[in-house]
Structures are given as C-alpha cells and as structure tokens.
Amino acid sequence: MRSRNPVFSRRGFSRDNGYAGFNTAPQAGGPAVGTQGNPYAQGNPYAQPSGNPYAQNPYAPQDLYGAPPQAPVTTAGRMTMDDVVVRTATTLGVLVLTAALSWALLPVDEATIGRSYGIGIGAALVAMVLAFVQAFKRRPAPALILSYAALEGVFLGVVSSIVDTHFASGAAMQAVLGTMAVFAAVLVAYKAGWIRVNRRFYGFVMAAALGFVLLMTVNLLFAVFGGGDGLGLRSGALGVFFGVVGVILGACFLALDFKQVEDGVAYGAPREEAWLAAFGLTMTLVWIYFEFLRLVAILNSND
Image 1: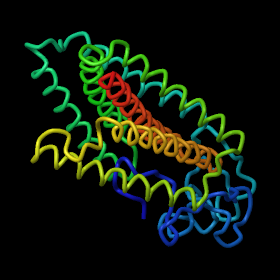
Image 2: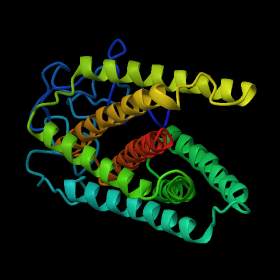
Image 3: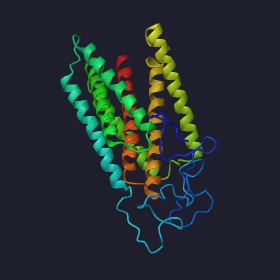
C-alpha cells in the first residue's frame, strides 16, 4: 500500500516487505511470468494477473488477458512523455505566475511584512491540505493539482521576496538556478544509468527523508515553544549542513519521480496519470528550491 503522505507518496511504487519493486522489465507485450517483471505487482492490490497494472486500460499494451489478438492496439489514450512534459510545464507555469504576482502585489517592507507573511503561511497551509486530499484520491484531479500549485506559488513568492529584500539580494534567482542545475544533473545521471533506482535506493531515501522530516519537526516545535531557532538545525553551520542534506534528498526524490514516469509510460498508464507525475515533480522541485533559498539566506546571514 502506498504512503498517504503527499511528500513521500509516489504513485506506482508498490511495497514488498517495505520496499518497492524496481529494476524490472514491463511484461505488457506478452503473458506474465510470475510477478518479478512488474514493479507494481509486489503487494499491490491493483496489480492485474497479466503483470501489467494498467491491463484493464483499453489503451494499454494488451496481452493474453487483454483484448482479443485481432483487436488493434491504440496509443491514443496512453500516457506519453510529451503528456508529462506538458502537464508539468502547466503546473509549474501556474506556480511561477502566482509567485510573481504575490511578489509584486504583497510588499514586505517593515510596515507590511507581517501581513504579507501571514498571507503566505495561510496559502502554504491550504496548499498542504490540498496536497493531502490529492494523495488520498485514487484518481488525479487537475483542478486540485493546479490549485495546489497556485497556492504554493503565493507562499514561495512571499518568502522569496522576504529573503531577497532582507537577507540576500538575488537569492531567489540563485535558488532557481540551483534548482535547475540539480534537475538537469539528476536527469543526465538517471538517463546515463549512474543512478540505479532499486529497492535498496528506495528504502534508503525513504528512511533518510522520514528521519529528516521528523528532525525538522522537532526543531520547529522547540522553536515555537522555546523561542529562537529551536535546536539550531536551521541556522549557522548546522543549518548549512541540513540544507545540503535537504537538497540531496530532493535530488533523490527526483530520481524516484523519473522512475515513476518511465514505468508509467512503459506500462501504458492512462493519460490522466500524467497529472500525478506533474504533481510529484512539482512538489519535489518546490522542496529543492526552498532548501536552496534557505541555504542562500543562511550563508548571507553569516557574512
């Protein structure tokens, strides 16, 4: 059963004794032999006997359990890489647009910074709720995903404006360039085979991310009730260290996202699944951008 956490949930990764089934070849073109060829079959209640999780999809590659042999196979309703690119670009476009509008329309001078920051935090909380709702849904909801992106953009626009104005001029652009560099590097490394997304990789990333989030939550609670920076994990040398760890974890999640997209295309996922891929990629890129922004702010505050 996949995780319901919108940060950790990655649709298409099934669980087998706590790990996902990776590095397997699609079986959609012929009869399945056991379940070893299907990364979705291990412990997946939705897996089909053919070895293809989308076998009931009329657009998926058919096998002995699918359409009659004489029926032509169509790709009209199957997810393609172009679908993922278009949906991801749309989602990120909405996020960037609302970020730019909030930057321009919500001033962060000394007199208005509190109000603007409150609006940003409110948008972030609503975006989190929408992310959880989508994580619980069995099917993607484009309106929900785009609303999440819009609200997340408001939050990032306000926070970026604050950091750029009060901590480091040009911080937002540096964070954008850093995020783009990580995305390009992980994509090249993944396509070149330098990153192997297998069960061990998945287990390590999920365990490390869970520990990271729990540690940051404890630090936040200490900050709320004790004042200051809590345990000091988000400032100074420790802040830089954990910022780098956060970026590395984001890069690892990008590799998981790429694997999800690759498997979805290979198994003939329905076209609507491209929205889930866009949702996952957007959340991961937001994670990486925010960690870069925090790093720039910490490094400049130490100057």
